[in-house]
Length: 280
Ligand SMILES: NC(=O)c1ccc[n+]([C@@H]2O[C@H](COP(=O)([O-])OP(=O)(O)OC[C@H]3O[C@@H](n4cnc5c(N)ncnc54)[C@H](OP(=O)(O)O)[C@@H]3O)[C@@H](O)[C@H]2O)c1
Image (spheres, rainbow, N blue to C red):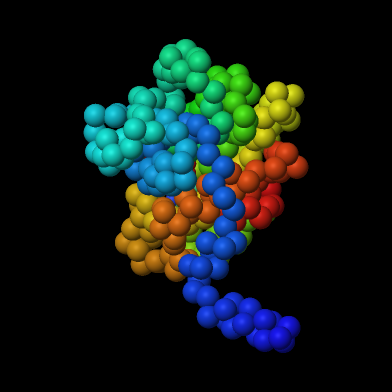
């Protein structure tokens, strides 16, 4: 009888579909309130959809809500999604949003907004200081500024999590690996993500005094306007990038699982979307 039971279990495991296994092993949702920057398209929009589908209250911010058609549809279908205007390079606007949301604890703040910068401006032949300032402002300074401004609202929440979306480009240890996939040098983008890593790692230790967990999270190569821009450029140069991409939905799903399950011991770490650590 005992042998039959074991055989039945083995048979059911062998015949379970991948979806069954995912459903069986996936942690239960752990919803709260999330605020996401740059959520009108790409990874930010996918994160807004994923958080919403897992029961979170979503404050989806973007530069131009009027033009954010997909985000507006999401908000019109789900009362748990609200849209707020925020250009992350505008300090006054950041503070005004904190004031507007002053009674709303934020369980997870996701600093997602980012730019690659013009490619010509970050080649050795075309280095452009103005473009360097713009990329650093959006990718490095703004997440620190937004995190500083929202720290008290995050600290007032139950989950107390701050996430900055970084990139393998920001890993000093991964420069050769990224180049081996066919990705071009993108000096300003890479420098801005390395600076982001340093900023948020320093911030993580300070914010830990408020029991806030801060991590850097890399989404992987994701099929968005940003990734397509790099690939189109390399294809035109006759050097197509061969590395696979995942959909924004797949990347967002993995990252939301990591965010929901963040642990204190992961504070100040640089994580891949599966939660493994990326070397600095
Ligand atoms: N895609 C990838 O393979 C990949 C890989 C590694 C890391 N990442 C990182 O993932 C994040 C999202 O990238 P993505 O691929 O989704 O890029 P994307 O499709 O180009 O979207 C970028 C988002 O950032 C927003 N944004 C840019 N400047 C902003 C500002 N000043 N204020 C507010 N929002 C601003 C954009 O808003 P507008 O629509 O108003 O321009 C847009 O919503 C970025 O931090 C990026 O560096 C992406």
